[in-house]
Image (tube, rainbow, N blue to C red; front, side):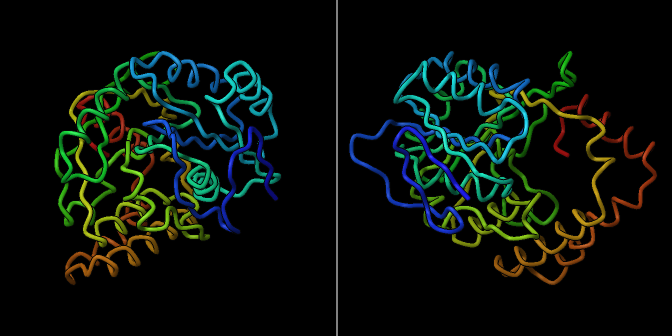
Length: 293
C-alpha cells in the first residue's frame, strides 16, 4: 500500500512512529497531501521562506489523483535531503499518512502544516524559541489567519492555556499550526488510525495527550494562514458528526471526565440540526470576530 522515496524510514501497518536518528534537524515538518496540486507549491514556498533554516519536510501523498505528487516531487528533486516524500498507493486518511511521516521524521520538534496552507516566515523561529523557554509545555499552537482563497477574512484565536474542561467543548488548539516536542507525540503512539477518527484525528490526539498529563499553549500571534472553505461546515455529513460524537465519548472516558461533560457528546449532532443559513451566519461572524469555532 505504501511507497517511499529519498531513503525515508517507514512505520508499521498503521504507520506508527519509530525513534529518531542521530544528526537530526531541529524541526521536522509533517504534511499529509491529498489532491492539492493547485496549492501545494505555495505551501512549500512558505516553508522555504522560513527565517529558521534547520528543518526538514516529511510529506506523504495520500493517493492523490491530481498532480500533487508531480509538483511535490519537483521540489524534492530541487532540494535533496531537505524534502522527503512518501506515497500511499490508495487513500488511507490523514492519521495514517501523518503516522508514516512521524516514522520518518528525525527532528527534536515536529511541526504540522497542511498542504493547502502557509506559514508566516517567523513561525518556526517563534515556536522553537517558545518551546525551549517553556519546558512545561509539550506543544505550542498559534492564532491563524483565515483566508477564503481571495482575501483574509479574520484571525482565529484560542485560549492561551487550555484546561481539560476546555476540550469538552472543542479541540482548543489549531492542529495545523502546532509544533510538538517529538517525545511527547511519540509517547502517545502518534495518531489513532480508526474509522471514527477519519475526520477527528486532531481532537482525538489532544484528548489522549491531556489524559497522559501533557499540556499545550496557544500563542496569540497569527503565524499561519489557513485556506478555509466557508461552506465546508454546512456540508459535513451525518456520518462525520456521529464519528465526532464517538471521538468525544472515548476521549472523555480517557480523560476521566465528570458526568456533566458527557452532555457534549451530542454537541456535533445538535449543531447539525441548526438551519444552514443560521449556521453560516454564526460561522462567518466568528471568523470576523476572531474567536474559536
